[in-house]
Length: 266
Image (cartoon, rainbow, N blue to C red; front, side):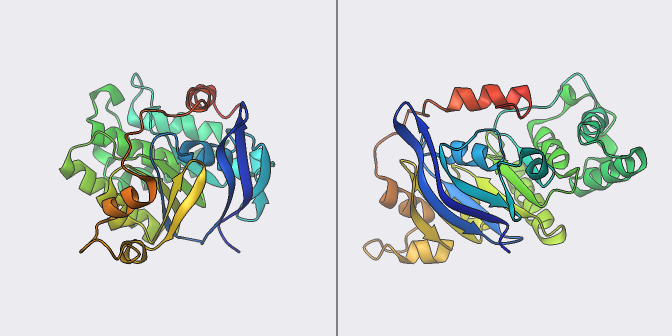
């Protein structure tokens, strides 16, 4: 059984398809990259898979469970949103404890798991500090720890290293690879950093105008451009999506962010 099965998944806004009949399968424990320009449909697709948005048509399954069964799917997934979502007035430990209560985790299990995930992201000695004193990298590591707290089978990482310095970004990469290998978690990663996708992902899908325009391993995608000598993943991205600058993020984005802040409601 694949971790994610997507069949003709579609989301329309005022007659425009933000996601247009996508078909895709992602394997168990795969580290999968989802790339695309602004407004290409990445965020909409992840929002449907994580049950924040309801599809206009089509279907998807998470570990064999239809995404229409919201509560069952939400127990299987973790999410690290692009926008910060921690409570700065709480400590790292308090943020994780609050999250564990949302998932009705028994006290002893919660306590052990919080210690485990803090150790995984090297924040054991910082857990009693207020989050507002954390650096950007520490906050992202805490958000990753929070996403892992309830033992998800699948983790969605939406721009996990956005705005971080190169050293911190590299450390986050190593945490992502470590949890993928040691915890056997399927990870779906969106990013605009091509070197990040190239370094981390086993396979990559490039989405544009709501459709998958390229799919394969980084090596396979780079070899598909025969006209460019020693092509990079950035060359591949531009080859399939064009040179035009994309300022448009799509009519769905503000709606998605608003719903996410409400806590899963759609």
